[in-house]
Image (tube, rainbow, N blue to C red):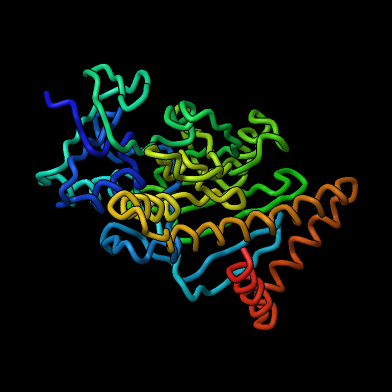
Length: 350
């Protein structure tokens, strides 16, 4: 087996596959390594936002929602969306991306391959040792490439059940008394509904978060199988993407939103951008910088919210009041203009 490649990508999730696709039909030899036997499935809610629009994910593989509902304890707020929210199963997304490169002449795909160790300019796996000019870590929140670089991670946690009942409402549920700045989501898919909880383990105990999720399901008459429970860490601690000839993308780079847990759009964008950088060392990473601005803005707002929750920790009614106030303000055009101005200010001075 040929063991020398220009680019080795570890991880065939959205980031790794988009990186490979951008390098498709170039003069670079590419090896894409995936630990699983099937490309696509991953512990993920499968939510898509307008940030994913440029990647032309087929409409027939998604469910689309023009409205969302936000529930704060017992009060519901419904909002029409300018940019629809969508859901997609990770298997569908992975297979869609894989089909773009399956017949590529310059890309080799190795599935069911475990990376044991990384050393200078080589990757040691259970199927041999492979040498690289460039290495791309697209191997998720527990990235072996990130660990090789000696970078620390900070995580939030997402845990969920897929239930058989197919629902039709895209819902966010906030309860600052129980979840602090976290939330419960209901994401309807074509063949199931994904219901889960996203939280910061520094604020909420993992067992407590799971109990809150199960209580929510029982209270709302969602039948679930406890053996169908899934959970995963989400690394949000971004410390850079470029480390000489080694690159990090997606969750491996900490490119998930701490505020919302959104990761697919950041993964796709970073995969494409880093591939362009490999092809042209002078490329300015325009789109990557744009999503970093969005990520930082979200996390600044989250920090303000977490600070307010801490201040009013012994006054839970004030926590609820602040959540409801923010949701109501979001409906006002003047408040939306302020947020847009804040976004433009961030872009100019970041």
